[in-house]
Length: 291
Image (cartoon, rainbow, N blue to C red; front, side, top):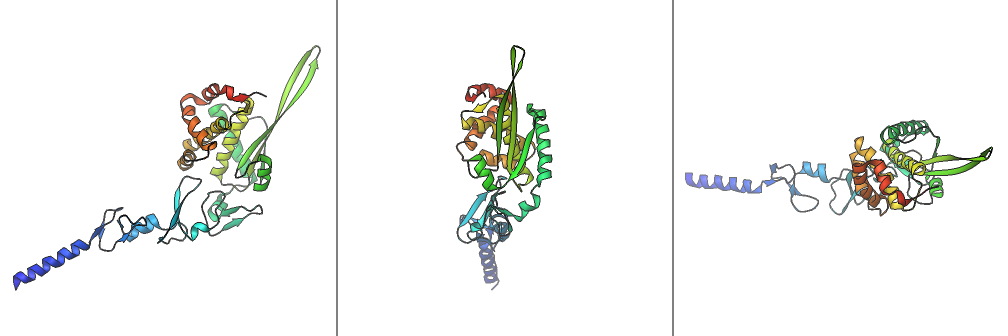
């Protein structure tokens, strides 16, 4: 009788131990496990909610889901229902609530709380011009007019969709005769157009890019190869983001599949890090047409 009791006890312990499964994420054992969303390994309910739940509604998707990389380089998971919501033009994530603009843009609540007004944009532009002047020798004194526009106006000015900003530069030449000598003076009229209601980091990213265009206009000329020109501007913008702790934005630029902006950044950034901006301009001097 005693031996039978021992056998029953050992058998019960063996069965209970066999039911314990190990979570592939936290390494803790439990009898209450579920398969992960990928159906490859066991996952505790706590880890499943932390790693696989929808970023919007918090429900763990049972069927298909979508992974979206935002402008800040962070990947978020959305269920099939939430992935069909409107996407914020600032962060690229779908959201259930937010603000609609007259030009068709949608902005989530989080981005709308951090969006900059006209005065804040002007302050940010002055700060960035001073920073770029100290690091790369940009001219922080010549006049640059900042105008905040909507998407439709920016598309008409830039002639391309899905942009957040553009720099338009007009050069006028004035001739003046001083006796028998002729003096030629060039005047630059630079206007920076940026989408209104951008958050600070997104606005700074665009401003650094466009201020580099302004620098190229003054010191190199008009670019003949868009991949080189945009690559230099993207490289300077990415360098500023990385140095100021915005590594997510920098990683997103590295993964950009665009054949002009993304490929240009991956081409120029290692050279900018090695040779500096002046060294890059010397290497690609023949790719620019002087005015």
